[in-house]
Length: 61
Image (cartoon, rainbow, N blue to C red):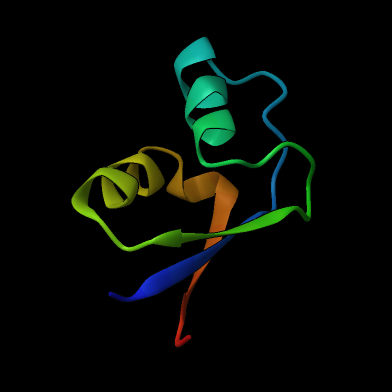
């Protein structure tokens, strides 16, 4: 299965609790932090919700 490298590029300060919780669920905490997750519909939905805060790349492992 494909994987996605997700990087937090903007702050969550001033965002709603729902968006902050979504960023934490993606295993991100500081600007510049990254995580590699499976490309599933659930992860894609979370990414879509906070796409203005993230940078997403496909990774071949």
